[in-house]
Length: 298
Image (cartoon, rainbow, N blue to C red):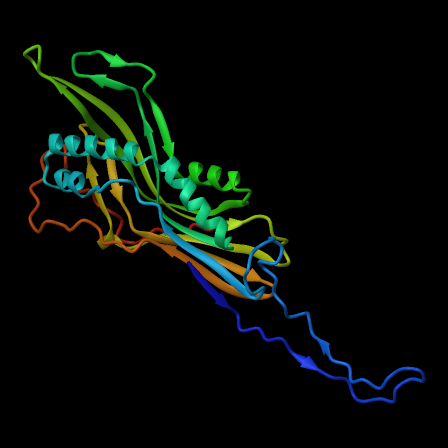
């Protein structure tokens, strides 16, 4: 959590002395200027902040598991090893239950009520029905887990008003998770679930403040150059890539006539490259553009 002030000062001045009117005592008057006050937090009752302070938050939501074993298996060409690791990751995501964690984040946000929130690892999982290698399946097991939707719902339950003003996809691609192996019938039967995963960086802004007091413009987002980009072919289908990007997003903010830029990014290194990779046919390093994509402004 960060809090900063624009350095606005409360000025006091007194008018030139004048004779007191008949019947009035001769007291010196002091007038306080109000036009340079910034009451960003003053509209929300119970918030014990200096009205000239601006509070912002940065929070990594955490996917709920370590992706490194799966990514390293993909990089080494071990497709089954990756599927096993992804099965463990998928199980960990369910056990860590972001919907419950979102309530904790919302309570922390409610205590501070920041004007802006920079979020990293805002995950989204879109999973299909479970299927097995013997041709059977489990209908009705498809599900979607979206950390952004769950956090916004928790904030709304706390009576808070926030909306995303910048959303940047940092990693997106398909996973195939191995959930179970049944060897009781002799020939092993594998149980899988295909999952479309997207990792995002998001900026949330308060929507309950008047525009003259708080406004957000000039949304920008961009990925870093090729040395921060890896892309893996994760299935026989040549279009099935998992791309790992690193980037940032930002907004220009105006608070009571004062302006600043709020920048959001995740501080994490990418998986390291092998010097001499021996990529099998179904797993090869894709060529990323030498030039980073231009900023996409809304």
